[in-house]
Length: 283
Image (cartoon, rainbow, N blue to C red; front, side):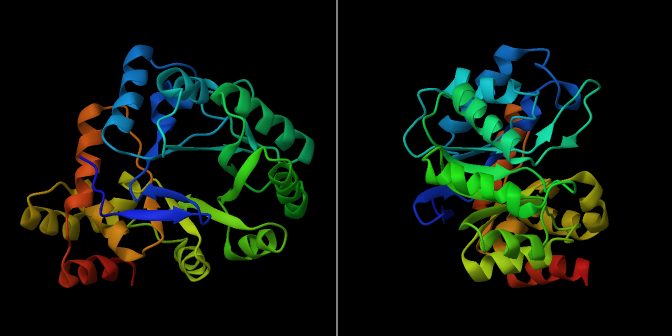
């Protein structure tokens, strides 16, 4: 079961557990369309909430649109305290490529469409999925600030940004969260983690147990996992929870067994020696 000991407040008023769920993997292959068993995907989403997870992350690009429909089908009306966070700023043209679109008019339309799919009047956390190199960041973030003023968004988040981009956005609107790839073997966003921690901003870590990143840490993870009677994935998640108090890992899976395994990481207490051994991997 999900631990109640690990909690964080996002944006000053949204309390969630520190292990969230990235819903992307309940879509079909390449994050396109429905999976082969749509009913099982919706059942998994219900299990996520039943196990106590209170942050579910999605995006209009997942499917595209499929993931938001799945979440509403499975979970609406939403249980009190459950935060469904979504994102806009990527499009999925034919072939499934990921193409950024940070134009204000696109983001405004995307937010309104997500509201309809999720059956919400206000999206509690709406994130710019990625900066668009062809659109000034201030214009993209400005559109989200306008949506916030209109009551369509409660809190604004960013994704796939560096510290300079975070600072640019903060000059326009309060930023509640940043979502970047981050795990024990891939710490390219370490400076973003620390900048967010200093400013009280939640850092949503995607690919928290990414196999590619964890390969660097395989030996240390395996040794520590054996000592705790845990899996390497659980140790990787436990390290994230211990590394900085603002990190919210959002592992995704289409498997009930993997979901329960991931949530078990909240019960693992790594020693100072364990943490030091894993910290040293990036040194």
